[in-house]
Image (cartoon, rainbow, N blue to C red; front, side):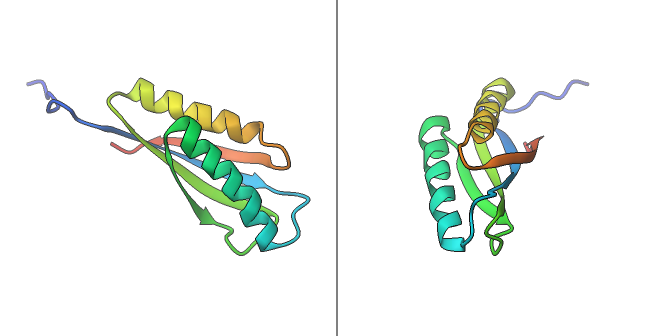
Length: 103
């Protein structure tokens, strides 16, 4: 017996990113820098973002990007674009990232 998914089944992918912000010395400065990156990711990649770790640490952050798409290829393209933008973000260093398929 073959399982067929219902028509219109969404694909949900998540990218977890850990970044270092070496020249940042205050939480206010960190949030300002992070806000600019998150706004750019939302606008250019069409994903949702939330900081999920190191909220009280000025020199690092952990955040998740989530996207909903009609197929895995589209979801993975968006998450890889987001990862690339994090890699090229001036003043921040990508330490680690992980991509997961949620649905």
